[in-house]
Figure 1 (cartoon, rainbow, N blue to C red):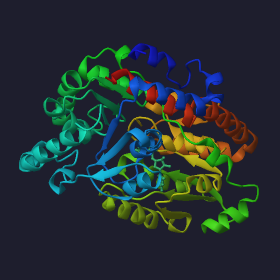
Figure 2 (figure 1 turned 180 degrees about the horizontal axis):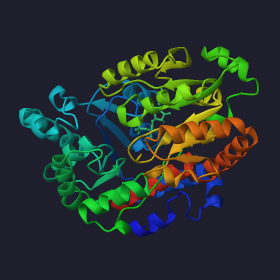
Figure 3 (figure 1 turned 90 degrees about the vertical axis):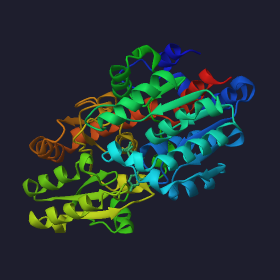
Length: 422
Ligand code: UDP
């Protein structure tokens, strides 16, 4: 299957979808794996030991390839344990100097880290030589893994999880990605049409050569949480039983816009906000600022900081509404399909990949990113019209099962790996 065939098969709204395929996925993934170019082996590389969206999307893929693949992480953390618990062969090759390079500091820091960068390029190349295909899952993994191509000589597939624009990245990084994507990567798979479009604009690579595979999630895990008695569920989670709860899920980071949701609270006197997630990538200042903001606005008693949680399904099902408030275009937004799978109405910032998931007033509610007033109005509207909220949630659940299933995702990604298998 070539890239454009894969693009045609990629799932997501509003393309026509292979609902028939969804019902027989478990076996078809197995068949695909069995047929994959005489059992090609795959090394997956991810820069993070933390659990973000890119890492959650790698988990099921690495698990599907557990018998013929391994994961190399460039930092240690809970992601390693999670992979190991799924039976995935995982190792860590970390270099503190390289891990410390942030998007913002990229311009100068990399010069000081040059020896460590060379070591890491070599380490990845050495590991890659033991596999047929090198699968790079994050930006740093892309740079370090692809630069070693003259050493490892393996086909490189890059899973793009970002919108490659100046909103998210510095000009140096964009330049590096432009060169690498054009000259050192054999195949790119994007997590949304928005991400694919941004890469096509940056590099001049034709859009048709960048297939899109939307994330998939285990919808059964959400169906299995019993929320028939919301009071019991909320008690178990330590949440107020009788309050009207708006939940916002994701790491605490300025562009995820938790401050917009807190700023909306003074106009929503009966609403409590539950923030689930932690500052994963050094954004502790922002986490502190959120607490101060809540105090300053006199809403601290209605903001619940839950920290990082593993049981998303339970937390989401305990909510009356689920918010997504990113101020920049979201590359995809797993939390949105999770909220939909939890059968809860979702209000989301309508930019980037989100518009490939949420159809306004049909399976959710879109507001302009960063627009506090629009967020207040949306919450008030759904609160005042529970039957409308229920209708949106029901359609959202149907759409998630149809378009964002885990099996379809793993099948499409396996096909993409098949595109570069020797
Ligand atoms: N997540 C989690 N526990 C938390 C907060 C977030 O497991 O406390 C998960 C969430 O369920 C989702 C992922 O982290 O699967 C975040 O992915 P998303 O695409 O929304 O954002 P990203 O991290 O990629 O920017």
